Structure formats: C-alpha cells, structure tokens
Amino acid sequence: QGHTALHKAAWGGHIALIRYLRDEHGLLDDLQDFAGNYAADLADMANTERHSEVAAYLRQHCSGARAKSCAILGVPVDASPSEIRMAYLCKAKQYHPDRYKNDKNGTEKDFDECRKAYQHLTLENGAGFQCNPAHSLNLMLQLSGVAEETSSSKEKGTQPSDDEDCFKARLIAVLLEYGDKG
Image (cartoon, rainbow, N blue to C red; front, side, top):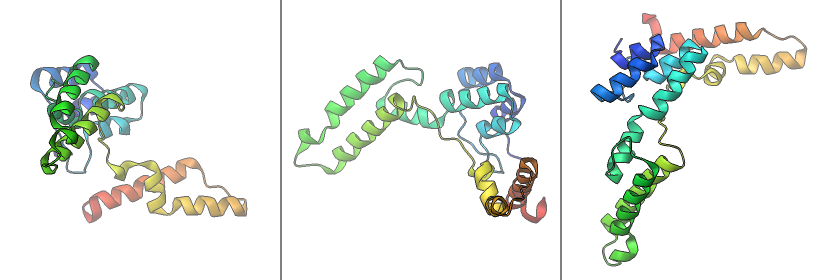
C-alpha cells in the first residue's frame, strides 16, 4: 500500500513516535501512499480528537513545505522566528531587484522565492499542505451527486439522513480510488 513508518504511526495516533521519526530519522510527511494519502490524511480518516491532533502536528511540524521554505532561507527546520527574520532580511538584501537594475532575470526570481518562503513561515506558520482531495467529504458528496439530491429533496420536503449521505459519498470515493480492483 506504500505506507511509510510515518503513515503507520499516524494511523495509530502515536504522536510520540511521529516526533521520534521526525527528530531522529528526519522523516517528513511529503510522500503519498498508493492511494494518494499523506500521513496527515490517514490521521484525519480516523476521526478522533487524538488523531486530529496528530494530523495538525504532521501538517505543522513534519511538512516538506516547511523544510523547503527553511532551506530557501538557509535556516534549520526548528529555527526561531527571529532567526527566520534575520535570514530573510539578509537574503532580501542580497537578492533585492533594486540592487541589480541591469540584471533582473535571476535576482527577481530569487527575491520572490525568498519572500514567499518567509511569508509561508511567518504568516502560515510553515504549515504544510498535505491533503488528498479525494477524501474531502464535500468533494465526495459533489462527485456522488448527493449534494444535488440533498438540495432537491429539501425543496420536496424529504430529507435523506446524514449517515446515508456520508456512506454514499465514501462508497463513491472508494470506487474512484480503487476502480474495479476494490
């Protein structure tokens, strides 16, 4: 199924193991399994409070996006906000387009890349974007046609149960994911 140790720890809800895998082995949640799920997706699927905390931790602290932004600025992944700011100011000064008025090709791109990395780390707290859209409940409802059925049944006065809607949506998602193999 293509699960890494991080996927298995997330499914089990073991945040201490996830911290260990990140800190000691450098594992990041940047690989999808064969179904397209990140470890954070698997934690979300369990739908418990503990697993929600695990998913949030994975997106906040084990994101490949955070590591990439830190690498652009030349700081370690666990850098403090002041270290991130100092590195950004140094890079911004180095690549600022006003400094190289004649040669804007490489420097504008580098400056923009540094700016985006800094914004990602400061405004978004470096949170990752690990998400398999095939498991979004709203998307599943739209793909299965349940969303239209629900709105039309409200007009008619009949209302299918939420459990029935979720079951239909998840069944469609499984069929889309596995096709005739499932």
